[in-house]
Image (cartoon, rainbow, N blue to C red; front, side, top):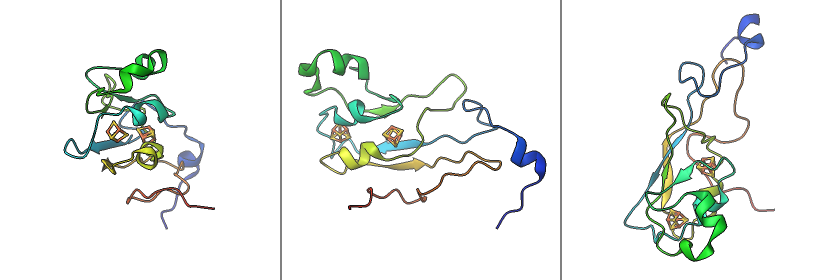
Length: 125
Ligand code: SF4
Ligand code: SF4
């Protein structure tokens, strides 16, 4: 297991600085995606967009949920995304169209607790 210095433990990474934090990115399989817009709506970070609609659009007008465009994760000016790889979108997608392209790594002493590099559906209880 990697050893952390006291500076690593004390340092708080800046979220949108790619040198501090590797944020996640996803692959949306256009052949499987029916453009239903569910993933755009469920993303807690509001970071999934399409060329046709934003999450705000879908929340305002449900009719736009039909053929809303193949989604992608929005990339900030810094190159970071707001995706934390929780995979809520993947769990909600009815067609298994979403997979991981780049995983989330907060670096320093801050580690994700449960998600592995292979994104899996949430555990059933
Ligand atoms: S993995 Fe989570 S944060 Fe990332 S796009 Fe999907 S729902 Fe949003
Ligand atoms: S939930 Fe799945 S099928 Fe629906 S828009 Fe998102 S990726 Fe496409």
